[in-house]
Length: 371
Image 1 (cartoon, rainbow, N blue to C red):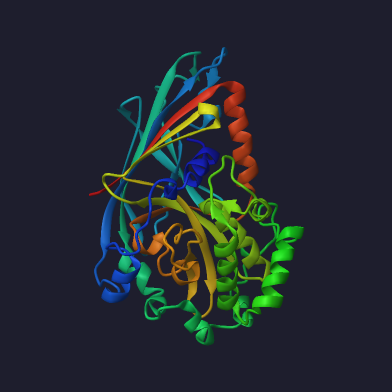
Image 2 (cartoon, one colour; image 1 turned 45 degrees about the vertical axis):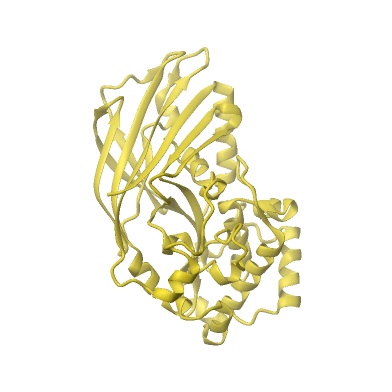
């Protein structure tokens, strides 16, 4: 399952059909009332499987499809992979783990499978990860945000611009083709935020940008994804589109940030099908779905997660919920990758055209369960 295709799966956001209720067990009013649960650990299974079919007239080299490549969940203090199973055409195989830039890739070792796929043939592959997710630890890291009814109350306690220098990793603030904060539209909005909203420190700037996004951008999916300037021009974007817009603004001020991607468990009964690329990509979501959000460094709290679409359709101000009610903190969420550099928007667009040109059809299933 090629990395560009997995990113396409992520961007078919779970909000396409899942309305988040801030009065549910993970919701806004209950979270404030109950505070942070002391022991909130979930064991989650994440299965990514499916098949590719060669609908072209020529044999297809399977290695060119990256069928046997899968993003591997990141082991951290709040997330641990404790078992993995991989298979090809119902036969289990061993696997290897390879580091690629800032993420890990699982590669299925299947020496017995054919190296090519004849016209009309189908091959299936998949992986199941068993992951422990510690939500209480994640929430504890931003406990201050649960103790106030509005993050604006924390601005006076926030660190200043000079404290950003402690990170020192230019990859997290650099301008890139994806996060091009010199684009005229990005600069225009930035100028408005500076002159009208007048943010005094990194947290104030973050909240100002979220306020602008809340007022000017609506949720909308597109394959391939949008660049930040396109989100501004169209006034629309899905989870990673809006996240990338936020990252472009943050990096423009030297605030370290990057895109984090993963899968969010929603409910055992959750079902959703998405068809993209003129039918060459069919994705079935069971129990959960793909998601993308922002990881950014805001002193003195350090690295926090921000979810720019979490208030979609709720009527709740985005500035109030984008941090404390980011799905990373309130739903069992498995992190599978960090996008720190590169231009996956261009890579995804190329992958879609390759599918259409060579007539390669993907049917993918993302299935999540609490175990």
